Length: 165
Ligand SMILES: CC(C)(COP(=O)(O)OP(=O)(O)OC[C@H]1O[C@@H](n2cnc3c(N)ncnc32)[C@H](O)[C@@H]1OP(=O)(O)O)[C@@H](O)C(=O)NCCC(=O)NCCS
Image (cartoon, rainbow, N blue to C red; front, side):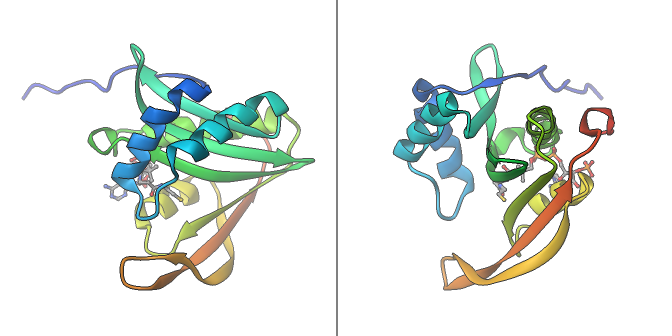
């Protein structure tokens, strides 16, 4: 059987002109998607050194992104999404590792995130990178039929670049 190789994605920082494509990916995968305006703002804040958006592209075609921020030595992952037809091929791991490596280079010692309790795939991704659940925010996320809990996860940062993704 012929196997199709995963294309070699290039990771780069996003800029405001990427916002439309990022919002389009987000709209396909999120119950409560960020708007294009939110992405424009997130990308613009790159200059301020507080918030970063990394994206993965092949020949300019964007297939995924991750948004994160840092205050002093503590970082937070705010959003990560992969285009549906590219999911399950390791791109989430590549983007998360790139973000954690950048965060560690910026001298953060801890990284936090929140994830929907029902989001089993994202929870597995985070667990694979050593994130552990250390709290619950009851009814934090809206759903189609009501609310659901957010799991708070965190991990210490040390030697990310040497970890196997
Ligand atoms: C969550 C998401 C970012 C993961 O990215 P991805 O590229 O699909 O995931 P990867 O292929 O890198 O796999 C990462 C891990 O997730 C798990 N995983 C991926 N696809 C899976 C599937 N279909 N079923 C079960 N687990 C799966 C695996 O544990 C995998 O690690 P492993 O292969 O080493 O065991 C992506 O699925 C996505 O965009 N989901 C919608 C948006 C979202 O939920 N974002 C998270 C908000 S907190």
